[in-house]
Image (cartoon, rainbow, N blue to C red; front, side, top):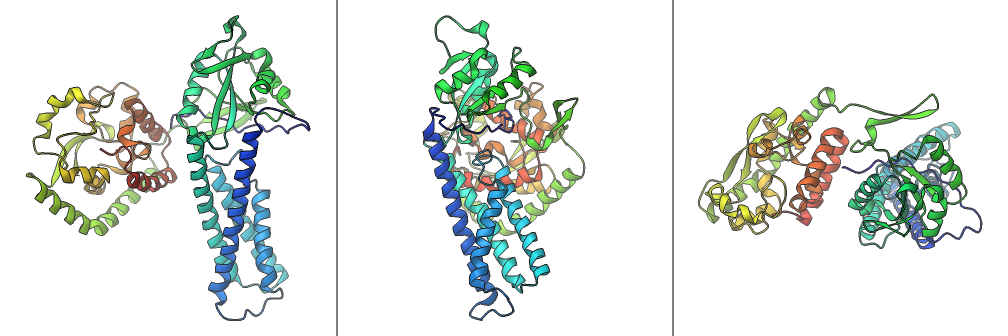
Length: 494
């Protein structure tokens, strides 16, 4: 997505007697951490119980030098300590990004390896089957618990009720406005902008605002401005006056205040795996790898696409037959609708869909053009009179797109990718938007899991370009997982 990349926050310890405004946020944070500890404890207790029951059932365990009534709670306690040591409760990773899940997995795997080695050396006789089942169930359970806890936090943040960081944005006016816009685009990330500091030359004699963000000071008094508005994070964006020396001094000034310092570079739309920070001559240079549009990973992606499409078509044949019959009974015309779309490299192909409109839908489009409800190059209408009764149901649950599995098998499309555009849309593309054609279009994508037809043209293009630049197999799996939720909610489907 087109979110400004925030560097890892620099945590500074709070001083005794620090009375910054903003204790409510810290209370919410502590409550969320306590919730995670309770969830983790419950999950691990269940995992150990499942491991014991599955391995021994009604039998009396034998061969262990330590009774399992001691082994079980010791394993749970050690596991919780391992999560704490690997900073799985650190506020810098909670609630956003994949680092939280990686740390939980790493803590579990390291403990499993250490337990296996220690058990072998000490020869305590604890059942390996019991440990294997407990660790397998526990790892999956911990990840699921974190996932559902995060979803609850995201809902609370989006409604203004959840723990969020209070952010003071520092930089030139244009860059401040851009960063504010990007942070507010994803409120669930937990960055609430409460003020801004701009260069001295731009300050007016009277207080001013940037949009609805109050300007609370200049670069001369950033720590004081943060304290005045109760900010717990200072986000520095681009500015000609913020030299490396001034930024370093700002970090020194924030030491001991309990305020985090983050840096939002001008580089955007680049995902973490493509970014590597390397110290060169005392400078933390950011190296950005080029996007990958061919190679072994692309071959693997193609193999996964076609294999999954084959399995899906085989399993969904009964449903496809029922849908075809319903379309035939509901209205006159063919079951399938074939439309020319533009794929990778600008090559045209025929995309297959179940027919959801009347047979002369294209001829009626000119009459409805004035009622278009979206901006940009697409036509969308919430109550389109051309859509049939069965078509409305198919569109609501995205069932009209099932025939595109055949396009995936033919190599025209991928399971995940940008929306396949019409030739008329491509004819009006500018240089940036044309980058969507560097990869195969997909049956689903970031646009579908982020609102579908409710998105503006600009936001849809932004998401498509982000995918093109930063695609990965892991991201594809995540998008496919989120697609099920988006379809069930049927948000933006019309």
